Image (tube, rainbow, N blue to C red; front, side, top):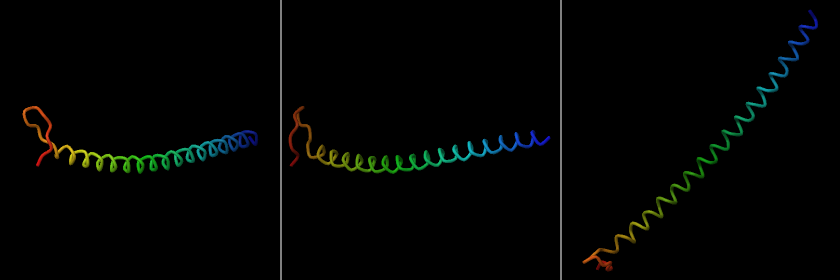
Length: 72
């Protein structure tokens, strides 16, 4: 009986350590995901800004008879 209690206690301890380790892994992944999301947001904002600049530059030109001329 005591042997069974000792064995069960050891299993619970091992399981608790595994759960703690897995929770730490989940926490690390969550922090990394949040960091990646912030970087993605910053890159998206910069890309949007650059696209706006390109659109503005493209709007400075108009096609006349198939040729590009600077709009006046």
